[in-house]
Amino acid sequence: MFRFITRRTLGAVVTLLIIAACTFFLFFAVPADPARLACGKVCPPELLEQARHNLGLDQPLFVQFLTWVAGIFVGRDYEGLGNCAAPCLGFSFVNKAPVLDTILDRMPLTVSLTIGAAIVFLLFGVATGIVAALRQGKALDKIASVSSLIGASLQIYFVGTLALYFLVYHNHILRQPRYVPITENPLDWAMGLMLPWVVLAIIFTANYTRMTRSTMVEQLSEDYVRTARAKGMQNRSVVMRFALRGTLITIVTILGVDLGTLIGGAIITEQTFGLQGIGQLSIRAVWSSDLPMLMATVMVAAGAIVVFNIIVDVLYAVIDPRVRLS
Image (cartoon, rainbow, N blue to C red; front, side):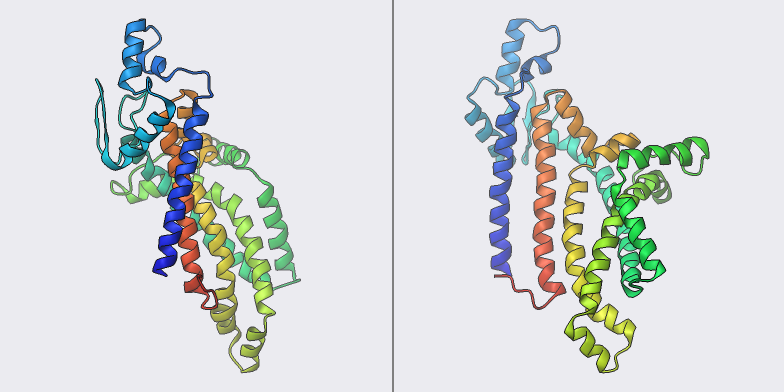
């Protein structure tokens, strides 16, 4: 297991470096001057050159990239701007502040949005899928199947807009989505994110319902399940101890991808509900051509997906002893 985790971690580091390099060099294909953005609209040529030097933009691109990578481990000094302590992801051209500070400031909202939504759509999706599989071919199964197909075809910006209108502006059932730190008021934290959680659950529950149902149906037809039933084991024990355990592999796989994507920034969700998380930060970085901020948000998204993929691979062996990590 240790060798497997070490090997996957090294592979993850290489993957992240490749993603960082691609993002870095593609950025300079955009016809925008980061130094002018940092200096301001009215900037004399001498100040523009000084800003370019302070930000290290007067060096070759390859040197700039290596300097950025080195800053993650040893920090970096920006002339005229200050020190960026390790791990340094850069100094924002627009905010004129270390990128990591801004990322950490927005991260609690994105994590809260992800965890709350995941709990809701995981519970409802898996439970509905199990019930549909146990009632295969019956009315409840057909209703769950049709509902999941409808839910999978919906988009967050469509459902979110309707939810805002009917539940917030028109009927005042829920409050306007906003973020309150859980340490300040747990109730306000939950109520402020309730609507985004519900909307994300509507979209994601459909996928978990379909995957759980199809996998559970396959597991119920396996030989070891039939053998357990032939030995007189109660149906509830057969489903929970055997069929569900085999189904968890599929659930954990798609959950790892979904969590990584949401942690990386639910851009459409945050844009729809006006939440200032990692997703909104990445959009503003693109609009303002803020390379360090863009690099940081891309690395957060890529890192989240890579980390959750490693966790999923490790969980395979925990869930199913037949799986061997080789």
